[in-house]
Length: 175
Image 1 (cartoon, rainbow, N blue to C red):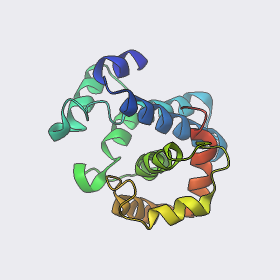
Image 2: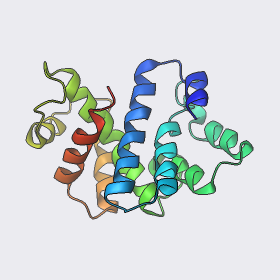
Image 3: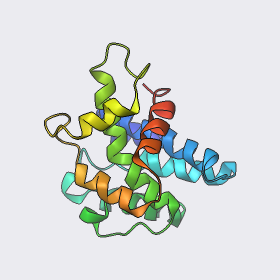
């Protein structure tokens, strides 16, 4: 997976985003889903490769990486999870918790990282309220789709505050 990531994604920032989503996904699987190591690795793999075709093939995003993973006989759950990380764009609805959580983490993870980049202490001391305030500022990290964040939150029964805190805690280890 790391070899594929390095071959397919030359942009260091995008690779960092994918590694951060992978770390958050794995941590959620272990801490909140009580997943065994094999299941947690599936969550991590989905996070690691979810945007692998974005940079080189933005018009065919998800289709290209899914075709590649199918050729490599990757677990269909991982493939479906990747396909469902943007249901409004890709037309694949999240079905299980892994699918729903990658959708919830994807945009929010990027947003929180953008907030960390403008802070002198990065993630250290970052609080939930400052992230919530920035979410209400459309000009901050304008490329992050707030509608996707809202839609993802509507599909899970987890408060935004809890997700933000979880992402801050687990994402800061991957910088």
